[in-house]
Amino acid sequence: MKPPIKLERKFLVIILLAFALIFAGIFMVFRVFHQYENIIIENEDRQLLGLSRSVDRSITSYIQQFSRELKHTLQRNDLDEAETAYRNTGNTEALALQVEGTILSEHPLTYDILCIDNGSILYSSRGKTDYVFPPNAGLEGDVDIRPCVDASGTIYLSFQKGMEGELQYAVLIELTEFYEAVAGNLISGTQDRILLLDAGGRTLLYQTDEGAVATLVQDDTGGIINQDELNALLNCQSQGENVSLFYQAQTSEDGKAYTARMAAIPADGNNGVFTVGASLNYETIKRPIHMSAIRLTAYSSMIVIGILLLAGSILLVARRNARAQQEVLMLREQNLALEAVTKKSQALAHHQRLEIIGTLTSSIAHEFNNLLTPIMGYSILVLEKLPPDAEETYDNVLEIYEASRKAKTIISRLSDLSRKNTPLTFQYISPDDLVVRVLEIAAPAKPPKVEVSHKLQCRHLWVHGNEIQLSQMLLNLVLNTYQAMETDGGTLTITTEPEDDWICLHVADTGPGIDPALLETIFEPFFTTKERGKGTGLGLAIVQQVVKEHHGTVRVHSELGQGTTFTVRLPIPAQEDEHCDNSIS
Image: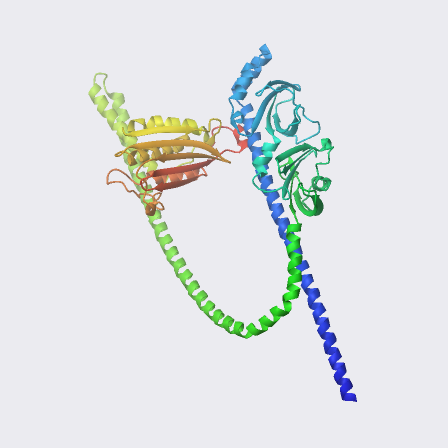
C-alpha cells in the first residue's frame, strides 16, 4: 500500500503546485498591469507637465514682449514732451497721439491702452473709463501685471508702468483672447483642459464648449468652477512646487462623473503671473488597461501553447538573424569609419587652403599698405606746396591721393577677411535707418530694369554693432542682387521684422536664382560664379564674417527661375544694455 500512497501524495503535490502557479501567474499578470498603469500615469504626468511648461513658455514670451514694448514706449522723448504739455495745459490730445502711434496699439492682442493719473483714467484708446483693478492681485515689479474688470464683467490682463507721482500707462489684453493665444490650439475638448490661475488666486481661465472663459473666483456663485481643480491649483501655488493628482470631475453634457488627472506648475519661478494646470479624462486610459488585463488572462494559455510551438523555429531564425545583423553592423561600422576618414581629410585640406589664403592675404595687405602709405603722404605734401594757379596739377595729384585711399580700403577688406583687423567700435543702430542709407548709397549702381521696394517693421528696435561693417554687409547683398538682375531686370525687396529676440533682414530678388549645388560654397572666400573681372568672390565671405562678428546668422534660400532670398538674423540687445554707453570697443 505504500507505493500507491506515495503516488497519491506526489499527484496532490503536483496539483497544488499547478494551482499555485496558476494563481501566481494571475497575480503576476494583474501586478504587471498595475505597474504598467503606474508607468502610464508617469508618462501622462510628464506629458501634462510638458504641456503646462509649453503654455508657461508661451505666457512668458507674451509677458516679456508686452513688458519690453511698454518700457520701450515710455522711454521716448516725445512722450515726455506730451506729459509736460498735459501738466501745463491739462489737454490729453498729445498723450493720445503718442500712445496711438506705438507698436503696442498695433498688436493684435491689445484691447485698450490707458493713461492714468493718481488712479483716474485720463485717456483710453476705446474711450472707456469703467475699469476696476482689484487690490492685492497680480505681480508687482518694474512692470505691474494684474487682472482688471470693466462694468460688463469682462476680465482683462493689464500691464502697468510709471513712476510714483507721475503718469501711469497700462495696456489691456482681454483674458479670453490671451488664453486662446497661449493655449487655445493645444486642446480639442472640455474633458482635456488647460487651466490658468493668476498669482493672486482671483481669476481662473479654462476652456468650455462655447470657448475660453475667464471667471473671478469670488464671483463663482453658480458652482461653475470645479472645486477640486481650484484647490489643486491653489495648493500648487502655495507650495511653489509641481503638483500631480487625481480628482473627480463631471462632463459638461450630462454631468456624468469621471476620474481626471491633473499636473500643474506654479507661477513662482516660472512665468510669475499664472499657475498653469493641464488635466485629462483618465477613464479613457484606465478602461483599456483593465480590459487588456482580463483578455490577457483569458488568452494566456493559448499564447503559451503558441509560444511553445514556435519557440524552436524562432530560436533558429533568431540565430541566423543575429549572425546576419552582426555582419551588417560590421560592414556599416567599416563604412562609417571610411566616411569619417574621408570627411576629415577633406576638412583638413579645406582648412589648409583657407589658412594659406589667409596668410597670403595678410602678407599682401601688409606689403600694399607699405607702398600706399608713402604715396598718400607724398601726395599730401605735393598738394600743400603747389601754387594756387596750378589747378590742373592739383587735380591730378588729388586723383593720385583718392586712388591710393580707395586701394587702401580694398586692402582693409582683405585684412578683415584674414582677421588681422583691430577691435571695432560698436553702437546702437536702427535697422530701418541702415536699410534706407544703404539703398541711397547703392542707388547709382541700380540697373534701369530693376525696381526697389522695402518693408520696414523695426521702427523702435535697435541692433548693437559696427555701423560701417553692417553697411558693408548689406551693401554687398544689394549689389549682388543688382548684378543678378542686370540683364533681365526684376524686383529687389528688403524687409526688416522682429522675430522673438532677433531682428531679421530679408534681401529678396526675382532674379535667375542660384544652382542648388552651389549653395553650400557661395560663402567661401574667392568663390564666384561671375565672369572674370566682374567679381572677386569676397562679397559673401565678408557678409558671413560680419554676421558672425555680430553674433548673428545668415541663411540663403533660392530656386532656379524664382529668385533668391538672403536672411540675416541679428540679436536684439538685452534690456539692461540699452542704457549703456553707445561707444563700446
